View 1 (cartoon, rainbow, N blue to C red):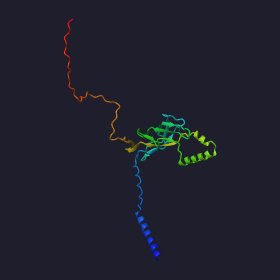
View 2: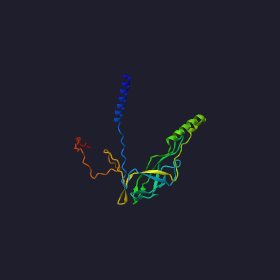
View 3: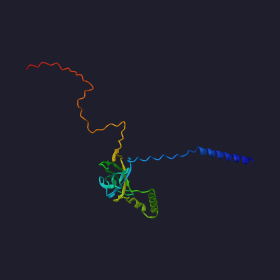
View 4: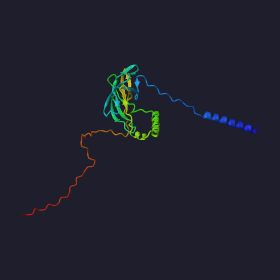
Length: 242
């Protein structure tokens, strides 16, 4: 009888403890969804799809080389076309590194010219990624590493071959698509697009820089006024007679 009473008390205590813990558990609150952009506005850092007209490869590209691209689809705001499909964009290679051994893939950096919009204005663009490289997923990288380990065991001198194995070059064919981000906000005003650029970041300690020092309009007054002090001169002596 005493044992049954003890078990019942233990069960009651466990149930009450569980209820208390359940009441203390916080209820997750869903994060508010971001408010959609108002009609007639293309926010800054919006993604645009560009299609390459020229091929581009890290094996043959050089710094300063230009290539052609165009807007893949028309850009419309509130039913008004602000940029037609096929609007031209010129890209420039700013840095390139070719594939080397062992297993170093090629990569490059580029910049884009502004995108022409209706009304004769232009929208500055920048690449989605600062570096273009060969895309390798984590699964592909893991599979390649395991394959090399197995070949090192089964294939004689495979570990030496890996030291001289060249990486892959980035090769973009004509028709490849790349993404660009807008560097300004596009708004429709009276049915015409307007571009609003971001203000540069200014610090409170920033000092304006100028490469030219202006010539003063007048000679500034010296801070210290000098008082003339005549020096003592020796007493002139008579000229000796000849």
